[in-house]
Structures are given as C-alpha cells and as structure tokens.
Image 1 (cartoon, rainbow, N blue to C red):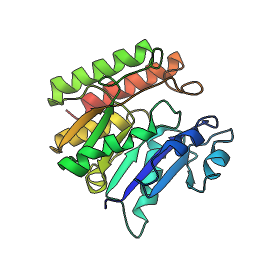
Image 2 (tube, rainbow, N blue to C red):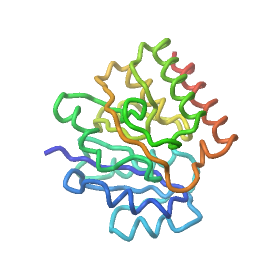
Image 3 (spheres, one colour):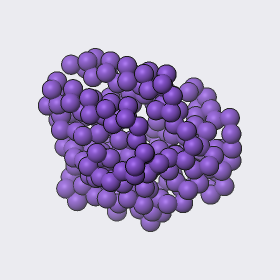
Image 4 (cartoon, rainbow, N blue to C red):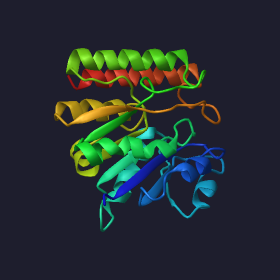
Amino acid sequence: MAIIDVIIPAFNEEGSIQKVIDDIPKALVRDIIVVNNNSTDQTSLNASSGGDVVLHEERKGYGWACLTGLAYLAKNRIQPDIVVFLDADYSDHPDEMGKVVKPILAQGMDMVIGSRALGDSEAGSMTGTQIFGNWLSSRLMRIFYRARFTDLGPFRAIRYPALMALEMQDKTFGWTVEMQIKAVKKKYRYTEVPVTYRKRIGVSKVSGTLKGSILAGIRIIYLIFKYI
C-alpha cells in the first residue's frame, strides 16, 4: 500500500484548520503535517489538538511553508510514496483526496492537479481576478511549454521522488506554477481531475486584497517566463 503524507501550509486559519484535518480520509494517509506559517492566532493550537504533526515556519510565504514540510519528510526513516498539498482554508474538499491520488495509484501518473476549472465551484468562491489569473497562467504555459493545465489549484498530489527531483525553490506565491512548469520540462506524466471548490473560511491573504492579488500575479508571470 502506498504511503501518502499531506502537507498543509497554514497562516491564521484558526477557524478552518480543524475542519480540514477532520475531513481528510484517515485510512488513506499516514501523516498530516500542518506548517504554521507565523500565525498570530490559534492556528497552531487548533491543529495540534488532533495529535497531528505541527511544524513552525516563521518566514512568511506559501513556498517557505511547503519547503519546511518537505524538510520534515526528508528526515523520516521511511519516506512517503506520494505527497498531497492542501490549503488550510477549507475551500477545497479534503474528502476528495482519493480522487486526486487515484491517477498516480492506478495509472502511474507522476503528478495530479485538482482543477477547480474542471469541477464545480460555489458562486463567489473565486474572485474575478483569480479566475482570470488562472486562465492567463494556463494559457501562457500552453503557449510556452505546451502544457495542458486549466488551473494552478493548490489541491494536488505528486510522487515524492518526482517532487524532490524538481528541486523546488520558490518561497512565496509561485510554488504551484513552479512545480507545474518543472514537471512539464522533465516530461513527467501528469493529469488533472475535477475538484469541488467552496467559499473559504476567513479572508484570503492573497486574493482578499488588491496588493496580494497584484504581487501573486507578478510572481506567477515572472516564473512562467523565467523557465523558458
């Protein structure tokens, strides 16, 4: 049976983190690793109440949190076969994890992206800026890399050895697009599966502000051109 670990970056998600953890299919995964990304609320306390692994990364940034989670996995005596990344805001449906990892387990895929564009999204769950940004990024990746993506969705699964071979570097908003571009360049087998998306709990630190949206957009477009 494949060993599956989950990494959940979390910044000020005290109202949602336990819901995310509770909905993860426990029979499917070994470890749930929450990376508390310098939260100022009760995120860490709420995450640790279930006995799962809680790490602390004081350097703010989605990529920093993901890299901290990977560093923890690298120290395990038995490393995972698959790593799943999932947001802490409860916008994704963690119970759909089986669907996300299935193409790796059953079809030999290296990476699977949970696509919100292909699935059902609750009205208002994504801002117009998010929808346009995902469309533009996917279009640019198709033009420059012949990549077949419809989304940069954070709900994703990837084989652990394949992930480590990507030598991920981005520390901020560009983590997802960096992974996808590098996977295409390495000719990984990848696919997308439709996932359900709902309004998040709390306010987004990226799309919830004009500044966050602009910075994320600039970073993503920069990385798309960086790896050409």
